[in-house]
Image (cartoon, rainbow, N blue to C red; front, top):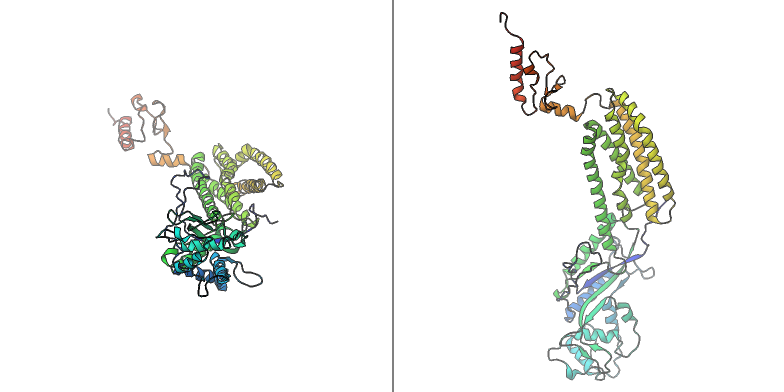
Length: 490
């Protein structure tokens, strides 16, 4: 059975944008996900120079004529009829408009072809006195390209509907210019505005919800390298373009979110197991028990992670959230078994194993049964989160039981520590120099220890050796031997 992602399958567009820079998020708190920051303009962006217009025209042609290798690397979509890359370039339609402009009523020698220059636009404006009052132009008037842009999008200010205006209203942005913006004579619109941003749009075959970050990040980098290489060939006024997926669902952003969540989940699993090991060693006071329990947790975690590709999932938001719970759930049963083995009064491994299963085995099986039963109901949920959570819970408890009651218990029966083997208490005694035959001091409030030698003089019975004074121990014992065994004749 294959599971679909919670995201809808919808193709994404890659936009090549000019006129903008990275958002200023300095005023946003890192927890405020609704804060969009402040827009930062690229003031170098300018399409009035004719080389810049030609550069955008050439770049659009470059996009339409990508090689098969480039198309595969960038995952662009081609038209099923023409085979061309599906690209939406405003500069192409603007070129077509002026190449096919009806020049009836214009002087025979007028040239209004693209790229637009100051001379061409002045001729257009002077031959349309009902629209443009050139006598009101400032002597430093500069926004000739923007004037031609507005003339195209408004169909010559005729009031006729223009499909191009609808198609490009989201990828072209203008604002008033302090010196150049003028009102057209009918008083219903403006010309001479400042072009703030513009963008090309390329259709891809990347479907939202089916692209994992492992493959997706490589595609993002391929687009980044391609656009940067092309921008390096551009004139300075249009060389700061960048690529993004900013319309609708931001696919590039989601891939980065997926990668961040996956990295966080992996780090959480690693840190969880790393922290579980010393805690288990301390809780059982035995390094062998702690190690075997940690191995059981690691195997459980690995098996649950393996369920993700087997179920046909990508490592996304829901999967990352569920992964963060694995180690906490996997540690529950094995730690009780390890503690039961540690608390047994028996010295041999089989006796301890019997005590462990007798005291905590039934409780563990009962607890697992109730948890498995509860998660089983979520396997049939209609909401994706609950279904996935139920699968993660069921698999985690199931694998945890398998490795704790199966593997962990079996290994303890074969190589489980006996007596003080692997005990932290024995290691501590070795560090402080305490022998197995030493006994605790009974006359100094339990502080220190001494050798169980038959004591003849009461004054020596209370002598206790502190773990911090072990170098003195030999001298004390030597003194005791001298006093206990006097020479004959005394």
